Amino acid sequence: MPRRRLIYVPFWATYVFLYTPIVVLVVMSFNAGKSPYVFEGVSLKWYGELAGDDTVLHGLVNTLIVAAGSTVLSTVLGTLLAVGMARHSRSRLLDALGLLPAVLPDLVLAIGLLVFYAAVKMTLGLHSVILAHTVFGLAFVAAVVRTRLVHADTSLEEASRDLGASPLTTFVRITLPTLAPGIAAGALLAFTLSLDEFVIAFFTAAPTEPTLPIVIYSMVRFGVTPEINALATILLAVSFTVIIVAQRMTRLTESLS
Amino acid sequence: MTTEHDIAPPGAAARPTTGRAPRRPRALGGAAARLAFLGPGIGYLIVLLIVPLALIVGYTVFRRGRFGGVVYEATTENFTRLFDPLYFDIVVSSVRTATLTTLIALLIGYPTAYVIAGLPRKWKTIALVAIVLPFWTNFLIRVYAWVILLSGPGLVNETLTGAGLIDEPLQLLYNQGTIVTGLLYSYLPLMVLPLYAAIERLDPQLREASANLGARPVRTFWSVTLPLTLPGVLTGCVFVFVPCLGNFVIPEILGGGRSIMVGNLIRDQFLKARDWPFGSTLALAVIAVLVLLLFVQAWAARINGGAEDRRA
Image 1 (cartoon, each protein chain N blue to C red):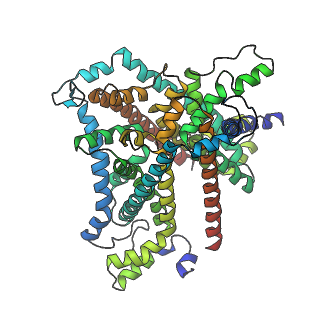
Image 2: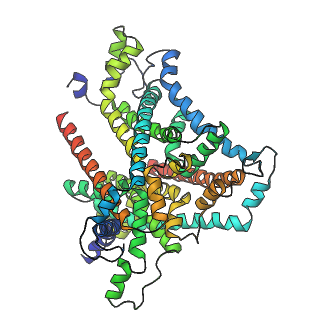
Image 3: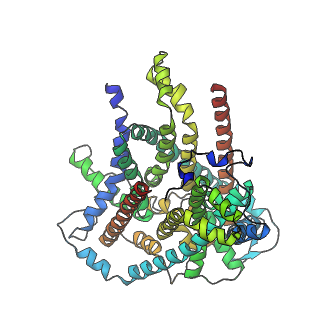
């Protein structure tokens, strides 16, 4: 029996390892004192400081613009590509091209795009980040939509074609509605990935228009302040809520269908 | 919405009325439809992925300009510099750090995934979501949390002095071990998930058969469980190794700028030294290591697949 118990040691160690830093961050965000290490009583003052921090708010607005822009582009391009790959191509090379942005280290993509923007003499700004995030965003949307396409029944599309509908009509009236849940999931994934993306944004954003992760990076680098803890706690709360809601929604749609 | 096709068993739609493969049915239109669907995505990836990668590869044979930029004059000096011990040692030690992190992740991740796979259904979902949750929070903040934890007056030192194990706070930050901890913390979920998927798929009857034939649990693990979950092990290792190798944020925040990795070197060539040709050469070295790794993975997966065929 003690032998069987032994395997629970790394299991629990994993969860302690994953959650201790998060708990400390959250607790310290309510610290009344100035030290990020020693707890001196409960207060919300760091949340107040954060609310008045224009740099953080500016970064947040930029991040939302970038995420929204790249999600729209990724969803359109990724969905078309997924349908094209599943229905109009047998190329293994194309499959590899579609996977490449997901397996390439972000740093390599980041410097590649920096070099490319310089070569075509494009000025950096939010648009350059949107274009950059679309590279991996469309790959993830395509991957998610494709898994749905592979399982999808093709006979409806064939029926539509046999009854004389044009490819465009078939796509809009049959394929798209069937794929809607996959497209939504892909778009959500692209949006979340863009919100949190740092390395590529760091290389392709203009210094005057940083995204929120870039703002966090400079905060973390130049001094430790409890304001970061407050920001971390808010971001944690948002991510956790989104994930739990998404989880509930998938379960709901599963039970409905 | 329930149509007759939803009820039909999988594969029924591909009944040999037409003799087509079920996965890739006939194209829904001619070349025009092909172009309309594939054109935009492929075009986008060619312009913003293939061309940039080609530029990086191309720049490796050119000289840097005096004020940054590139002089189009062929040279091999970037590669000579790459093998200069000053830089090559950093590449080697980065590979070592990434390998060490991957091994530790495997050692912790495997038993964790194994336990999760054996949990009752409800707890399984909760355990899996709990593995992924930290992954969806900001990466920089997760790294920063370790600065708070490991600093002189931080929680770890407090606990150790409180327990009477040490008298003075330890210098836990800014060394190789801190970097490995940060990398492990950031990418451990990427190891657990593919391992879980592989272990979950495993037929419990195989383990029972092994036990019934007299094998002890350890023997069953080495001869049955581990070989059959090897593809998951390999996937997990690649998922962890790749982001570790190119990382520059964790070495900077947790390494204190003293112990740098190849990612920091690349970043500095592009943003500080403005030596793009040499930065591109370092990036190419990283790509080369990763391509090698993917070949090893494909090779190991094929050998393993062959073993499975023989067993069947």
